Amino acid sequence: MSSLHLDSFLPYRLSIASNRVSGVVAITYQAMFGLRIPEWRLVAVLAEGEGATQQALGAATRMDKVTVSRAAIALAERGLVDRLPNPGDQRSHILSLSAAGRALYEQVAPKAIEMEARLFEGFDAAERRQLRAMLERLEAAAAALETERG
Image 1: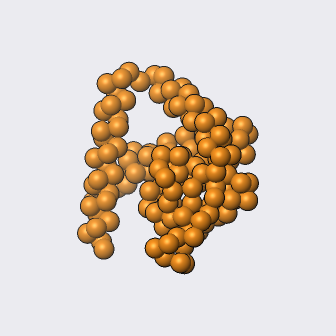
Image 2: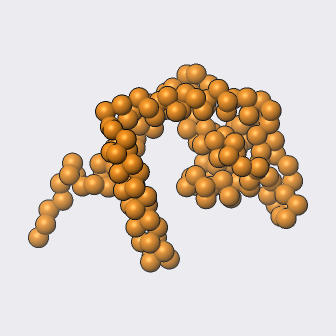
């Protein structure tokens, strides 16, 4: 029988790495911009598109609907997103960045890129490409397992 050693169990190591990176990012975004990670994720996704429903935002960010809802409410209260009725579904809204939200994104995005560069200072370009490719394969494998489980 194999025994599990948590420190060498890759899903655990990925979770620890993710938590550490997210923690550093969270502290920075909170201190500089008053944003929590879920709020920043919504701002970033909305900046890349024309607007989206909370359901679509949840799918894009892999966050649960309660987290998306709370983040959307916080952003709307700060005037960073506009909530417009969804003509295709009267029970939902289309969220889009307001002018203030877009201005905030323009301030945060360069800091995000700078933070990414600092995190990967010890990696050369080939290692970064390899890590990205491996993460994509890992995400695809996890998606396949999700599909198997229904």
